[in-house]
Amino acid sequence: MNGEQRRNELLSLLTDSRTPISGAVLAQKLQVSRQVIVQDIALLRANGADILSASRGYLMLHPKQEARRVFKVVHTDAQTEEELTMIVDLGGIVRDVFIYHRVYGIVCGEMKIRSRRDIQDFMEKIRTGKSSLLKNVTSGYHYHTIAAEDTQTLDAIWQKLAEKGMLAKLQEDEPVDFWSKMQG
Image (cartoon, rainbow, N blue to C red; front, side):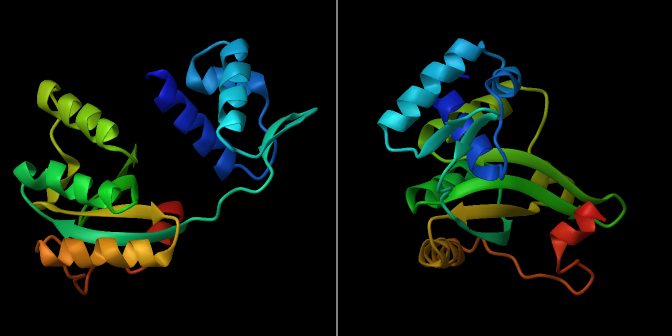
């Protein structure tokens, strides 16, 4: 993980937390020293992040509220990079990928893809690794939780995926509220 990726992850951890996170905990999660965390916090602040240093750790003062939507999609392996690029180019963040398997239930993997560089890193890992795309377990059908600054961005992503024929229709036997099924 390079510095930019680490700072993006750090920002994500702070944004998702409602309570302060200590520098030691952040350092452990990101596998760096506490001093690196201090430097990264300074860089993030210089770029406009509203991060408070409290006695119990770091906290985002005004965490940005993001819009999220789950998209059911289907495409070939060769279209994976195109799908991800469309999403990030329109301002989306691919938070995760998951499948609904009729025997195993919901199987989910975190992605956090927010840039073309993230896409290139992901595609390289798929090409050079021994694992294949999760979507292949369910004949190409899979879901992404997409985050964006607003619902208009999510609508634009929805429209573009529809134009490319990548959106898939929910079937009757699929759970409608995916996340409550995962947590229950």
